[in-house]
Each structure stands twice: as structure tokens, then as C-alpha cells.
Image (cartoon, rainbow, N blue to C red):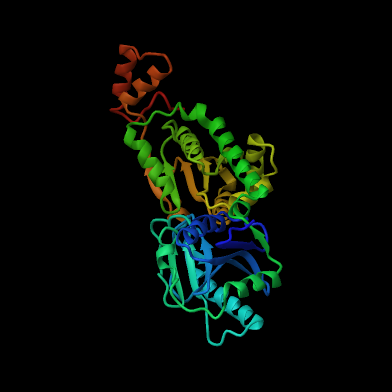
Length: 401
């Protein structure tokens, strides 16, 4: 049963990770502060979904739980924007206005149940994961405050006057046929646990599939690993360009392995396998890794607040389908809210100006020696002299065709 001090009611399963994180953070805080309160989660009021209502005898807070995997920007009014691989800021829901609408809807529902005069709940937008670097969003105003989950408790206006008591809110929960649950039940629903298991199974499968090739990639320096990871994880992602044989494909598999090991869903697609439909390519990749339906996995990825990565290797191999394929990549990344990592032999196309550029040179003489050593071989003095001569010309005997 729900805790006697902090009672939780839900209108349905709390599917989204951001909403579960909010409950997991604020309910223990209310209990520790000994604030008798009612927490309503995932409530439908006149056709509008309300993420969370926190109510006591002294305050009412209406909270929109948010997360963004890519940089966002926006003010009090107008559409917000989210950074795309092209470098453009595409339309994104104005979370401030969304929260204003939510708190007005809650106020109207209160008024229809028991008059509240000119009272309005406090509004909040709470980002439950770090706001991506490069974002620029308003902090809100007296109507709605915008903050992060770690700062939210300190910003919660608990000292005030509310026209409703705890009993009124319990009656409200009954009116809307909400279910009383414990915190464990709210955030540990069997479907939620199944989702976690599915995502974990998929990330484990990606890591296992690509680790053998990932371990074959030898960077020029240890700093190159950090530079690659930082570039892939910043802004909208990165574009890796370099000549044939410089290790781009092994780098992409190392990235997929590293990011998956850290728990992030990664979808690695080879451009050479593109047959006209990225949806088909995605289904094929997922089907080779796990037995679960691709649509099911995709739905759970969207509900999570994990950073998602789409890696497309070797776009120089698109040939005649290049225009269609590149357009499809941008659309797929947008729908998934994913950071995009692309490898290719040519310079970064203009339509991917939003991606950080990384140029990879042919392996140095020292790296070629290390590659030979890692394979259990050894370069002879004659081979070493040949490589030294090669570095003084444009001819590479290891990659020439």
C-alpha cells in the first residue's frame, strides 16, 4: 500500500523513464522532509496527459518531466528548437507553454470539483537527465520554473497556502479513478522491468557482436579514443572522414562497443547494405542481434531517456542512391532523437554541417608496426624501408588498388 505520509496515485503505468525518475527522486524527498502529500502520476484530465501533480495542505505543483538527447533552445514564447545533423534547429515542443497549459488544466479540474477562487498551481518543467551541452533554454518565470531534477526540490515552493486539503486530493483521485500504489509499484511495474531487460539484452548483444572487430582498432594515441568518444557524444554527433584503409570501420565498431557497454542503445548500419529503405536496414540489424520485434525495441528506446546513437559506416558506397540515402539518414536520426555518427572517404556533405568533423589520416609508420605486432607478425627491415619511402610519396602499398 501507499505510504501513509506520501500517497501515490497513478492513472496508468508510468512508462516513460523521465516520469519514473521524477517519482523516484521526489517521493523520498517529501518523506524525508516529513511533508504529508499526495503525488498523482500519469493522469488524464479532459484528454490531456499530466505527468505529475504534487499536492499538500500548503502547495500544489504541476510538473512536466522532460529529457532531451540533443541540444535544445527556446524562450517563453514561440516554438523551441532541437539541433539536427544538418546544423539547423528543427521545431521542438515549447516545454514552458506545455507546462502552463498543464497547470491551467489542473486548475480547471480543481475548480469543477471544489471552487478554488483565483488560485493557480505552481508550474515546473523538470529535466530528469542532464541538459545537453550547447542548449540554451529559458529558466521560466513566476508561472513556470524550468530546472533539473537535482535542483528541483530546492525550487519547490512548499511554503504557501492551498485551497485544498489532502482529503480533497484523495477525493480527486477517486473521481478520476486513479489507483493507489507504492513507490516500488509505480516505478517497478512488470512492464517497466521487461523494458529494462529488453534494452539491456539489446545493448549486450551489440557489445558482443562488435567487440572482436573493435579490439582490432589500434588508435594513433590513447587521446584519439577520448577525442572520438567526445565528438560522438557532443552536439548532434560527428562525421569521420578519411581514405580507405585508415580504420574508419573499426573505429565505428569500437564506438558501438564502448557506447553499448555504457548502456546506450546503438544502431550500427553499413551503407553498403542499404537497399532503398532504412527501416528495412534497421529491422535487419535488430533481427540479427536479438529475437524481439524491432517495433517493440524501437518503442522502448523512445520511452527511455538514454542517449541513442545511429552509426552509418561508409557512405561513399551509396553510389546512385546517395541522395535518397542521405536524406533518409537525417529523417531516421530525427525520428529516433539520436546522435548521428557517419564515416566516409569524402569531405563532410553540407547537409551534415551540424556534425563535428573528424579527419583520420593513414596509419603512421609507428602504428603500422604496432598493427603488425598485434597480428603476431613483424615488419622486416626491407618492409620498414618500403614504408618509409611510401611516406615520402602519395603511394600507399597497403591501400592502393
